[in-house]
Length: 317
Ligand code: MG
Image 1 (cartoon, protein in one colour):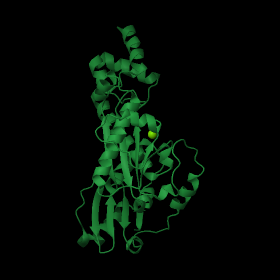
Image 2: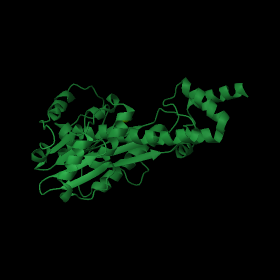
Image 3: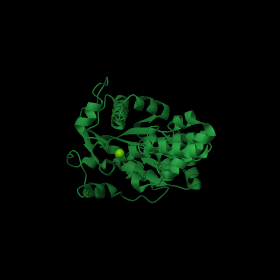
Image 4: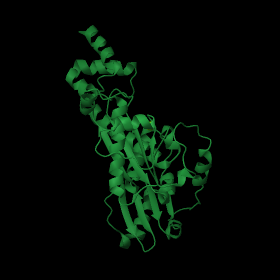
């Protein structure tokens, strides 16, 4: 299937809308502002201004509104894969072009805010589209850019996002769950969700951005009711190996940032990411203003920041 994405101005988007007004269809996906279906092409306009043409007639229709260039990023991604130094499983040939569910997490090193995990299914016929939406290694994207891109990914792919809020995190952490175990449980659950959503279809592979060796990962989740095992691969830097992991990493970040916005509002201060000395000072200030219980409810309480903040609080008392 051909996928073409054009970035259009609002005037150009309006002309797309009026051209296909009589073909308009209802699409309730997040981020979609207009959708139309012709016999051989569907047209989707996203909030971000990206307009997607999908199907055999994509090139014909897209070329009415913008310059259509042949995408070569697919080829370059495949060839650069060989030069990425990673740890983990050896991947099958042409892995970047396979149908894969990827998963990744974020928030694990941040004192404030949740841990979030996302899994995204990108079948081979959507890889080019996802690349054209701008999905790439999330370390090369700003938070603002990821927030802008997330709705486009959600509108075009099957995904699952899990947000483990601080109350729950602190509860299970204090029962002795390690971060590794917590992460493994969340990855397993997100992957299961996506598998359920796409069934009876199956991905060729599942790729987890590796945070633990395979053995450790499965030990962590050995007591779970359902354990995803089939065709599961692990690799570090996995977001560079398949766009599904890059997309998952963007959605996880998006969910983390959204939760941070809400927590910041409750705290009355823009919460600092990470776990630096600035975080200690901010935590102490929140402790003084809103009390220990409130701070507990927005932080990963077992981090060293808590004791550092306690010292600061006691000095000020
Ligand atoms: Mg990761």
